[in-house]
Image (cartoon, rainbow, N blue to C red; front, side, top):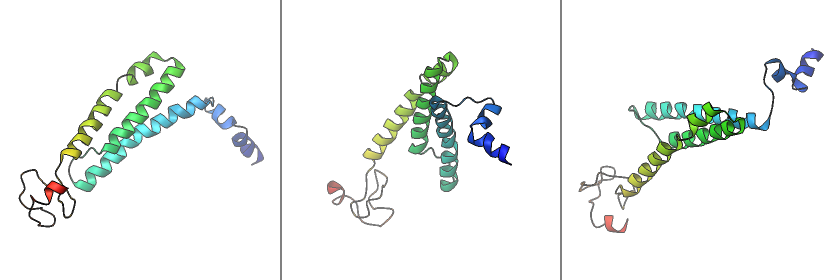
Length: 137
């Protein structure tokens, strides 16, 4: 039992697995974990809405995860890693910009502050007549 404790305390366990510890390994593994977690976020949002949904958190996790993996690839000077993540940030940022622009442009009820269709005459959530309240919202 003491030898098992010593293996874990001396960081030999990672050596047995062939993993050499370095702070950049943490960056690489963090990038992998963050990038992988986006699938759970998307799955959860889709299940909750009962339709395919890609929330902004998916794009943020994609962006952060891919930038960490790019940083790790640059540190390793690994051309495969670098090329794989060098340009992935472009669609992630573009999707976030589009999402935030759409959210800002979506009209909201002046009474309940929830979004409603642009051509609605009444708020589908609270029933208030839209128009006069809209101008101050």
